[in-house]
Length: 398
Image 1 (cartoon, rainbow, N blue to C red):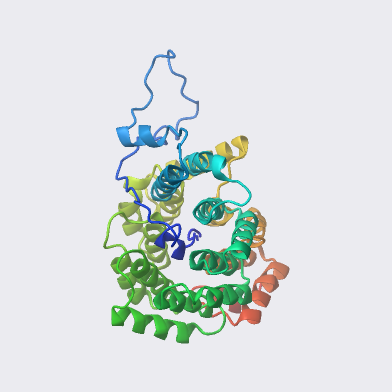
Image 2: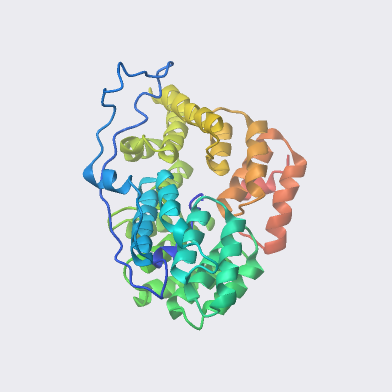
């Protein structure tokens, strides 16, 4: 999920709600490189309390100072800004700010826009059970809320509950645009033995020009790229990713998906060139560490240590780093397959996207764990999943 993909709800990026018109503020700001000193062994201590450590842009200063919204409409607008900024900059602090803005309006019951925003925050923080409960309660009161059904469908899909996801797609069909329903259904078909059908459907939709410009079209191209990867069609996957990345700002999920594709193809130098400007972000740092180790890049040890420092700091502070990425680091960088398998299995308990399946299979193979391999294969056989990148691991039982 990846993050994503989360992997994250690509459909939910269409907006927080169909019941309100929100002006979504876009923030194109560059943060100070907070991780520049990660490679040093000792923590930095300023000489005095007056010493300036970082200068924030006016935009970030404004975002970083949550205050009373004054009205529900203002709370919705400000929370939407925080969530968008958190997604684009991968800074979970701003999800906390969004929570703080919304908290005075979490009455019983909350209005649909407030409930949808809170569910989006919970989903982005991988609090899937809380998000599902919130959406279910909302739909009991507002059964025709298409956006809530779409978010619920995505929650079920990323957790491998495909029949529930299908049901949610169908329930939202009466109020969602037809193209959104088609994309929703196809995303489930791709994981349930109908990958060729889903692929052809979405290709026809892309060729038709019916998908709405902006987030829906980007969602469509993203799914086509993911399906192309599942089929081993890497050139087509790259073409769809380029189409999805045409418009600024470029979503981090897509940037990482494109560089994961480059890693699959052995294009390590391209990964390093693309992600070096992003090395203050933990997900970019992970991929830099993988590419650098594979290509014997001079910064390989530095990037490996920087990511390990992030893991250590997260553990000490109680902050979560997504388990799928942690398992990838343990397996592909620090060469600890048993630890990677333990982390991949913990991740599998809550998230079951195709990338989660791949790291589970790879960790099982590297650690020689037949039971873990069988666990993954049972899921594949149950749902009829087809996936070219992991096929060699499926065939080679430990």
